[in-house]
Length: 82
Image 1 (cartoon, rainbow, N blue to C red):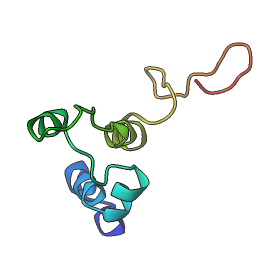
Image 2 (tube, rainbow, N blue to C red):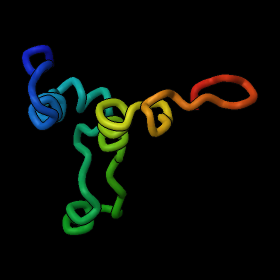
Image 3 (tube, rainbow, N blue to C red):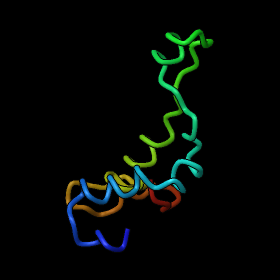
C-alpha cells in the first residue's frame, strides 16, 4: 500500500483487492457468486458483500456524513458525528 500512496485510486484499489490478508480479514476467501453456486448444484447462497462495503466506506466515501463544504455533520443533540 505504501508504494502506491501517491498513485491513483485504481492502483491502490488493485493492491488492496489482490492482497490475501484482505481476503482473510473480510471473509471473501472461497466466496462464490450466486450464479456460480447455482450452476454447480449449490444451495444458491448469496455472496458476501463485506469487500464492496469496506471499499466504499473506508476508501471513497468515508465513515462520516459530510456537508457540502466538506465539514463533518454533527448530531444536533449530542454533537456526535453522523
